[in-house]
Image 1 (spheres, helix red, strand yellow):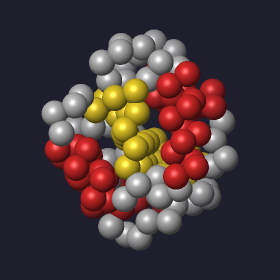
Image 2: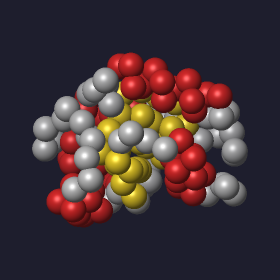
Image 3: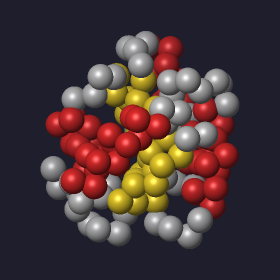
Image 4: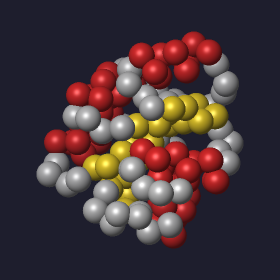
Length: 123
């Protein structure tokens, strides 16, 4: 881990964010939680070094893709977490700049591998 990258986690479900924070902290990462689109806009406008974002699209309307565009415009790599496997969601994700998509329930090893990759760290 590089130690200077912060992971922005976007999720409407507070419990999911708590579990993700526990996991990432255990792995040595810092995390900023965003419960809504306004939190995302505020987080990316801060001077903190956000190395990547995990965006769970569950419970968001189509405006979540605007959030993804903001991440792409700020050159923050991001991963989409989806409640279901869907070619349409995957297409939408990639069109808006996602580097990859994982379907829930998450496999921890896969998530950690993608986090390492997006942050430019060895696996």
